[in-house]
Structure formats: structure tokens, C-alpha cells
Length: 115
Image 1 (tube, helix red, strand yellow):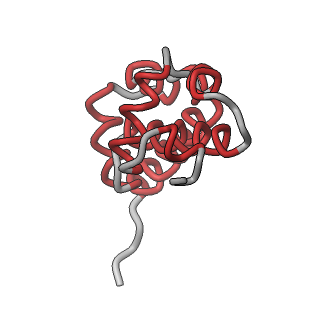
Image 2: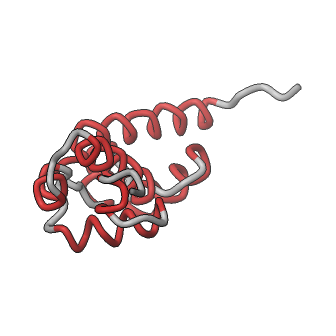
């Protein structure tokens, strides 16, 4: 069994900080450059180690958080535009694209639970 290196521990801690930052700021939709600056790395390096450790890109992680927030809002009877804006998206078209690509359902279908 190999020992964990100091660099591996450092990467793990950096990715954990990036995840915390993205979660705390998800409604503002931070870009890769903002997240990278928050954890003190270049965009390229953060992208590489985040994907290696988390199994998905920072952008995809943010999309997941946004989708889950909006999905919950839709199921709690918010209208599509309000759910979109509250999730940090610029409008209902962005929410539609996100939901179709992630859930294969439109926001309206999610809101009505397929009825």
C-alpha cells in the first residue's frame, strides 16, 4: 500500500476549499477564474486537479448545484422565471437548457412532475 504524499493531501484540501467556495457562492454563478483565485491556483491547474479528485469539472459541479436548487424551487411551486433567477441564472431559457441537458425534462415537466 503506497503512502499518501504531501502533494496529494494538498490537492485534496484545495479541491475541498474549491467545493466549499462553489457551494457558498453558487447563486452568484462564479466562473472558473474566480474559484481559482479563491483557492490560489491558475484556472488550468484547478480544472485539472478538481476533475481528477472530484470526478467532474468545477463547471459541471456548479451546474449540478444550480439544477438541484432550481428543481427544488420548482417542486415547491415557484414559477419557472423566479426559480431561474433565484438559482442565479439569467432567465428561464438558461434553466430550460440546464434541465434538459441534466434531467432530460423541461422545467415545466419537472414542476408538474411529468403530468
